[in-house]
Amino acid sequence: MALLWAAYLHPLVRRTGERGQATVEYVVVVLAASLVAGLLIRWVNGTGKIGELLDRVLDAVIGQV
Image (cartoon, rainbow, N blue to C red; front, top):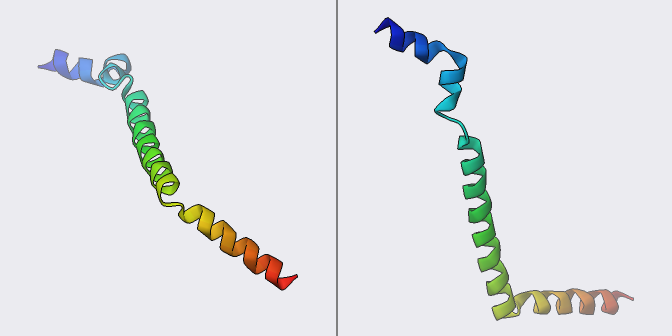
């Protein structure tokens, strides 16, 4: 039992179990963000809402001049 406790407290053994965890978490977050961005871009291109918004803004600016 003391041997297991000593192995757990040893810094190299303790870090080995979580090695690469941050990299995997980073990849998962990047993939999720990419998916959301892709869906948003697909929706924007399909609806034309951004074009309409820019047209309204430009018309309002031209109307003020």
